[in-house]
Image 1 (cartoon, helix red, strand yellow):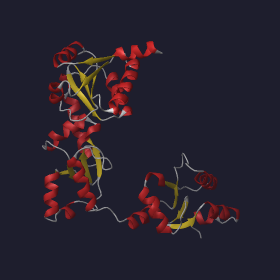
Image 2 (cartoon, helix red, strand yellow):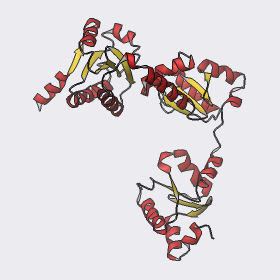
Image 3 (tube, helix red, strand yellow):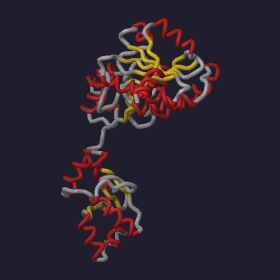
Image 4 (spheres, helix red, strand yellow):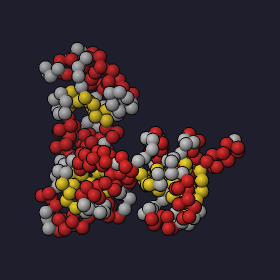
Length: 334
């Protein structure tokens, strides 16, 4: 056991100076180099060091490096390391990707992707650039209002992003978001695509509106409400959801995997009828979960709707089945 730990530790190289880092970049140019900028005071860094040690065992062709961010400030500043843990990926002595934060699954995914993608060639970068432009166009059009930010609306990871989310929520603006920390290619590419060097960035119908200062100005001039799409009121949203399909089941889980016994039983009954239906997982949306109870005046789940009208929960559906009334109701005959 102790031998295995020592072997894993040896697979991760510790760098203590700028010169040592540059030398390592040169020596390991042909392979993928993954650098963890860490700090001894951050417990999440210790966890990610363990993850790196495991990855080093699996990917012996990849070089894994630990660099204490505050001990080698020249390197940290050069690569704009503002928080720990941060991971940089290098090939041919060039940075090709970045991951901010303690996201073990994402780190594993990126290592696997870059390790299997072969040699990174700067000369062959014309096509990826074209692909990136297309990807950015799709991303900026992914929703009527798109926010590119650091972190997520639930967990912003910089003050500017936090303020932007607060303003949009205050005005009841419906928006989707993209965490630029999750994709270094998008993070760098969007600056050029939009000719806007900082984040957050807000887009409406694929067009850049601006960053935080512009949004504050639009808020002050009362223009923000006319530019950005409003989120539908909860009651309107529930009306749309209950009418989404002719037969709608609001349940814990989905068709493939029920997450409570009552939901599983109602699925079995509906499946036995051969009638097509759609499901909504109330565990995925707390607003719908709570709101639908008041909307339907029905306190529990599952809830079955036909043409937007509540039929009832499991007990009522069982009764209707026993009485032979369920099929005509599901077909909309009653």
